[in-house]
Amino acid sequence: MAGKNEGPAIGIDLGTTYSCVAVWQRDRVEIIPNDQGNRITPSYVAFNETECLIGDAAKNVVARNPTNTVFDAKRLIGRRFSDSVVRNDALLWPFKVTCGANDKPMILVTYKGAEKQFTAEEISSMILTKMKEIAEAFLGCGVKNAVITVPAYFNDSQRRVTKDAGIISGLNVLHILVEPTAAAIAYGLNKKSSSSMVKNVLIFDLGGGTLDVSVLTMGKSTFEVKSTAGDTHLGGEDFDNRMVNYFVQDFNRRHKKDIRDNPRALRRLRTACERAKRNLSFMAHTTIGVECLYGGIDFESTITRAKFEELNMDLFDECIGHVEKCLKDAKMGKKSIHDVVLVGGSTRIPKVQQLLQDFFNGKVLCKSIHPDEAVAYGAAVQAAILTGQGNHEIQDLVLCNVTPLSLGVCVGEDEMFVIIPRNTTIPTKKIEWFTTSHDDLTRETVKVYEGERSRASDNILLGAFVLSGFPPAPRGVVQIKVCFDIDTDGILTVSAKEKTTGVTNNITISNVKDITSKDEIERMLKEAARLKLEDEEQKKKFEAMKSLKNYVYDTRATFWNSTLPVADAKKIERELKSAIKWLDEHEFAEAYVLEKKRKELESIWDTFFKKV
Ligand code: AMP
Image (tube, rainbow, N blue to C red; front, side, top):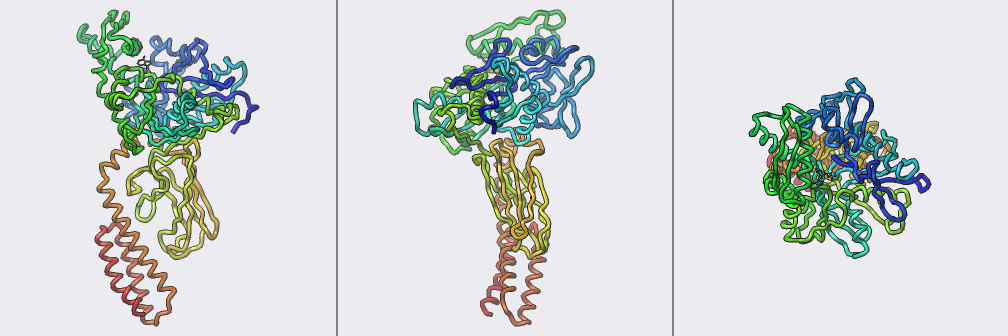
């Protein structure tokens, strides 16, 4: 936490296409205009012979310098080069992306005459530096403290990378806040005076690059994210792409020329398409014109709103599908939603609004907060809270988020033991007790997984560590306390402690395998649903194995505590040994085999112990 005397604290919405910075001043939020007077700044960085341009200056030269003007860096944050999404994106970008160490995507540009490589976080840090400078010019003093926003589905690693970008830019990152929660803060403040009842709100955030849908429950001064859904790859740029493709074909048809081999022409066409798309939010048709687009040919054409809608209808339908899913995850019906809030520039598209309104049976959508500024607004409020600079109205706000996937450890024969279920509100801390899996072990490996499948190895291994140094003991005697702790930034620390010796070890999941992107989460959830039956079978096997093991080891404990005649004791000991051997040899046995074995052992041992 930072204190009041550490100067102003800003909120930064680090967007895929645009970024926005705001500050809490004189009991209200100010959205800070940049040096061009614009309240949002393009998330663009351009490199040339002499300098590096950021924001409007970079976007203005994109047509002249397409291969060295970088945008969409947020799409690369925390991703691998081999990720198919990265490869597909790279096909559309005029700048080059190559594979760096550890499969990290590297952005390749020519800067001051030399070839240079940058990571996505380095580009993001340049944009953050620009936002910091915009705030400093406006406030007339240095700014250190900031709250930065990320999409709700950014995993631990992506949040960390964003935090690192903030640190590289010289900021003290007070908190990484998820975008829909930030929007909800903005919305909550607007609405607070009018009502004090608990409300369910659906935040529909459709920006340039991503769709984030969240269901939140808002109390008098609390915001709890109940569920999140969406797509990291669905937004305004995808709608632009559809129009670009349409006009590329149009040009080809008319002039028998394919402009796709010319990045500059493509870029100029894209800029014109984006402008046309914006116009179509207010007009029924618009003209698009680009002088000397390709081969000296001027291009001019018209497009109607109806055509634009037709080109994108499947994408718009997908957006509504994510709304449905989010409600399902929150276990709420459409009628439970009191308000539907629009955030993100692409929610200005009339068809999107209409589909959403139809889905909610004609409910009037909330447009009271500025779609481009709500996230930075909320981040500024959060920054003020964290530095104690806000007034009493905002100081009581409590913010909660949720875990996108279940988190747990591997126990027994590859069983996923869930410690923090999916959609648990964070920050959270959960403790579970475990024992050693076999006799006489002096070390146990704690493997941390994320996912919904019942077999641990079908989920994502986030990390592992060894707890060692405790004395050997029979299975069931050693007690190991495992604690899962997720902080407000969504960063997970797992610790394990053996009870008698107090030996301990822990891991902070900072280097998540960089694959639990939103797409990956979507894929995993779909797969878990598809393989539900198989998983249930697997669960049965785990249960049967657990029950049989417990029975065998409990019987052994009873045997050790009993005083049997030597002959009987020898016989039982032999049988126990053979049962334990059988267990080791039948790790993957079917549930019915395990149940049969248990019945067989019960019939011998239960009658025997009863008899003695
Ligand atoms: P954001 O990421 O929230 O800043 O949203 C940026 C996206 O919103 C870009 O793809 C813009 O093209 C899009 N956008 C902004 N204004 C409009 C508009 N009037 N109609 C359609 N899309 C818009």
